[in-house]
Length: 127
Length: 441
Image (cartoon, rainbow over all chains, first blue to last red; front, side, top):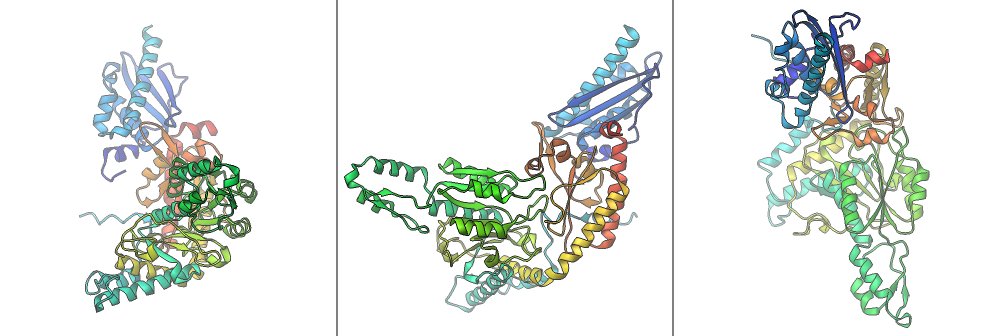
């Protein structure tokens, strides 16, 4: 990874690495495993009514690009709304990190995980 | 103003080595006032260049116990490996066209056929055989080559290419230590086997294959032994007579010489090895490698070989001490650190480790203060573990958690201490963020 790249900077930013208490009723989480790329991603969000994400934490096993993508998303989830979180999609991740073509799979995996976690929250609280 | 960033600690000496300043000094005049073509025999400029090449050839030969006339300069080890394997296969082997001719000969009436035994070494005169309607009795001449799963791609890809030409190739597995079981080699040799190619030291895990035992075996079974000694040369003692190898590949940039220059040792006695050249035109290097010689690079190669030979007795133990300290330091600070490959039969400057629950590329990226290499590459198609680590049989997980630390001539104790502290810190941080580490605890 070249010095100065956004991927490098983000992959080293582990401020929001960690976990939230799954016993807390405000917390929703999800896991995504992708064997072909050897990636395991976990994401937790704690949501306050009315739909504001109070905190987000992640864990990841995978290459630096996977870490960078999840770290980026976790940072942007802090204090945002569920509706705004839905805009953090794969094209946004790709553009924000200027991912090279061969690394775009990581943006797709992280976006899929976020979509699943948000859907899980919708199911849990909106039915 | 911020002070300039300290350059990363270079621990990737199996990838390449810096040119030793003493080597560079010897090379420089050959870019300027001593610019002659070593093949220009009619004036002083050419004589000076030729003398320099002769001296360098002696220096390279001395490093491996060869005669200078057995050293053929190439563009590097990839070319040397190609020349050794393709050159031997074409000189001693049966191509698809040869086999078709044999089939045609076999269809002649029995009374027209006379069994003949071709010489063990030396090209067959197929036109003569066809004219005589002879049936060929192979006497060891064949179409079979043997190599090992953990070889460099410049050997494995050459073997693949020869398979397309009709050769049969056996690729032997290694043990979990990365070492080759001699019994597997013995079992693989057939009367049609031409050549065995086994690297002396592995470029990823640094393990040392039993070349001396393989040399004795190949001699007894009358097949050629080629070894890619790129990583081993100048790092451990090498003697082509003791090892009984017939072909040996070298590269200057792995032993503190310049890039773009290598050599192939081609045995001239017992047996006299014949190769088909890959490049024709001009008949340089005894006709085995035509092309104007790169005199500055060859001079640098020679100087680097001589320095490596002189410093080897002290440098080997020094590197081993540093490597031991690195491993002990990392294991003191971290749990679950595995060594890939045998730790005793190993290059002194190589340490290949897996850190449980931490992806190698992610770790490498997390510590830009150290230049190392990881055992996997992740692309859009698939993540691809190194074929070497995969061959050890531990599964993808360990392969993807691996890093290679390559220590070298200019590595200091202070650098090793810095690297220990850095790796321990970054592995702990990445493990704290790893779901696998959480699950393992």
